Length: 74
Image (cartoon, rainbow, N blue to C red; front, side):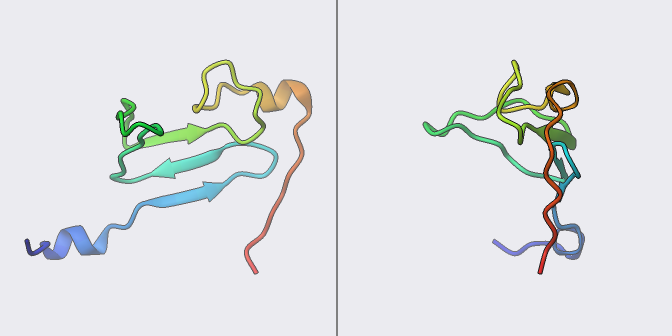
């Protein structure tokens, strides 16, 4: 199967937010360990602090608990 030019030009992006979530933007499929798909939008956030009550999605709890992490690519 050959991809069209438009498909190759648009990569999904994962942004590591300072002291917060992973922001996923683009056409991606999020699946659990068994391969079941989560319902997502074109942009969504995944929990990085481990305390969300809506895992794997972020619910903003990182702000309440003072989660701190600011990794940078090297």
